[in-house]
Image 1 (tube, rainbow, N blue to C red):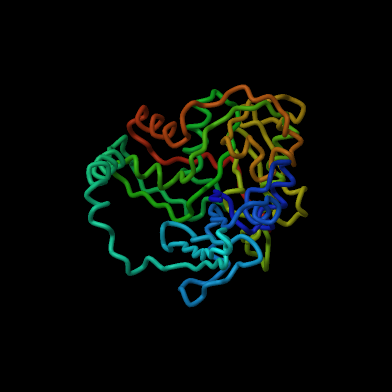
Image 2: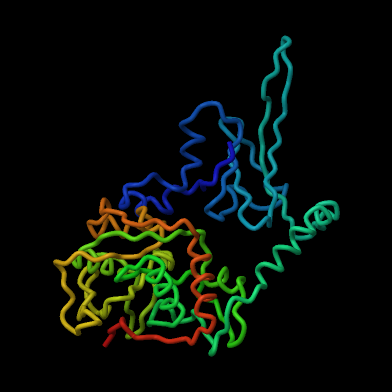
Length: 336
């Protein structure tokens, strides 16, 4: 069995259960509960194992399927050895083992390099294509702790593509930086790492508030400093555009979103009204548990993009030609 799913089911169980979706790391469950597998190769979780790297760390799996995950980015090769023996004209498995081989010092195959050279060059030419110009530097270093031009750019592109009144987006790469000058396609892949599409759903003002409350559980306050919780992936902290609000991290989880205002009128945000909200396909489909926590799991989906969000960003910037980083500070953290 070769699955794009990890062995560590507990890693995302809480989020999966909250969203009412199957566990995304179920390879071990399959190995244990589905008969017939002699070996199961896992992925997705980026975690190597269960053995350590090196043939000296091989593990025998004679009482069940070989379980093995090479990790990510081709850093290791997962090796499974199966020894067959013949008794009374019938073959049977006498021994099964697995180990990981490091690829650190392995030379790339020249035959493969030659075979892929044309496509590699075409890919490089594509990702280096200039689509616009940035007038000032932009980075994601503090993007989870204050309103930044980078996340605002993503949200505005989502709103422009869908016609939504409000948009949710996360910062996927805290290390992303872009200097003033040409914007290339590769920069978009740097700032937006995932192959999401964009959806537009109907949500009430109260559901939007509850969505943001669930998102704001990401923060913890210690000795006057705000940190992101290690048990919540950073990509599960969403920021909104199209509504003004503050996140009071001094308050208990579930009571942190305050001072919600309509940016157009300056009046209190209408919790009874229904809004059109843009968000990525992972989130709209239940990823992270936000929609379930907001009571919006079954809300009407009124638009699904036919393009990936990265291509939507590319088109948005190409149409603008010049991007001047700006921020409206529609949200902020209160810590004292």
